Image 1 (cartoon, rainbow, N blue to C red):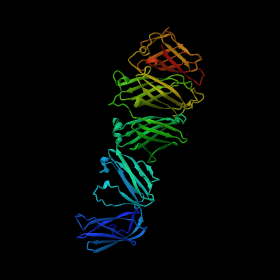
Image 2: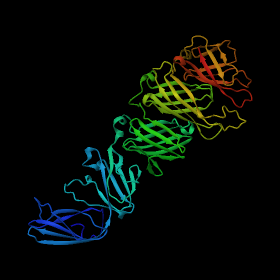
Image 3: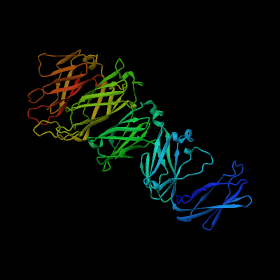
Image 4: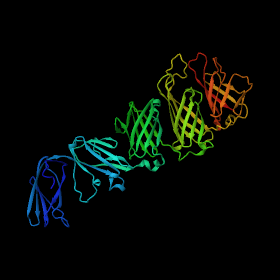
Length: 580
């Protein structure tokens, strides 16, 4: 019988199983357990038993109290003869902890192939594995193991998924559990925990919508303030992350408010994302008084940043739509089908901030990746890289420097939408925003827009596929004299220049000796530049720069100039248009 005679202390749940064997050559009638004045009869199952000398028996036993326990077992044969044995021990009350696993149906008889669970007590002697009979002869891994655990003991459970599977979630965790992703830590309650389950599923990141992606797909998306949060450089940002599909692990960076936050984490099968914070997995990553939290679906990574004052910024990081094996359609590429070159104008959308039009050039490759470089309308250089996601959209975020300072507290962001079927553009954006802090430039140094626009200003964005082999005259559709129009930028009145013609890609003035303006083009990149005569005194003519667009109502040259009146330390940006 068990417990054995050598057992001095038995630490088990309130009700536990006592089992053993009994035998007689002719058969056994019963086993009688006597305990504290009570007796219980046990009838071993012996019909058809192959070995009458080793008949199994068992009984669920509930001690009346903690402390010394003495049990007498008397075995009776069929003739009424008997023999007895006494077992004495000290009983310590423990709670039963049962840890089960929920795995895909095909692995129910071999759950170790889906995942395992390690159970560990902070003080080892506070928990002991309970041995149980297995009359059905089932594999040991199929039977949920049980532990006898001391109430209050700190327990740590660690779920580990096997190849082809990921951990999904815990079920039946006791109150007060601290979940650290696939790790659960809790103090054993003063009651049994019979239904704790670790759920494992087949790896979703290698099938379904994810199967079309690479083994390490990149996700990228903008963070923008919700309707109740004030827009600002501190409430906009971008997140970029790489998923290791075979493991469901994640690593990446987030840019927000001049900060760069690196992170690692794990995607669980239930749609949650756990991020490593202070060496443990957590549902949110603290940074600079804020928290980043994520969840996932086949659409991408849903992101939320919460600030100390309740500020909320949200977004969706999406994977690439195209790849080398799934290339972009040819109508957005050049005749060779390798890439598309786009010229882009960034005009002002309201009266605040620079009134000129910034410009950029964008190269889009057949695998859907892109690079952009340009100049904003007050002279700030910008560069960006990205890729097309669902809807042929690319979310762009550019960190901008603080004028006159060493920090980077400005930003430009927006969603580029590529649509070659539009009559006036091939790429556009309806949500470009530009945030610029107040300049730190010395008061004795010229600086455009010292106060900046920390609350942000909108920018337009329109662009078109550019044919590098075409002449400027063909791109602009100008058959006769052109018109250069200058306005704002501290001009008392608009300035119009018309005494020139464009032939091919060459400008001819009339008369050729006119020095009041200059105009030239770089046909291979679609850029224009020049000078003009304003209504103020300056050491040199103000320069302008811009880009050529060749489609629909936006066909023309778009650009900006900065005023340069002698002694003026606060120049402003004005617009330049080159039209028919």
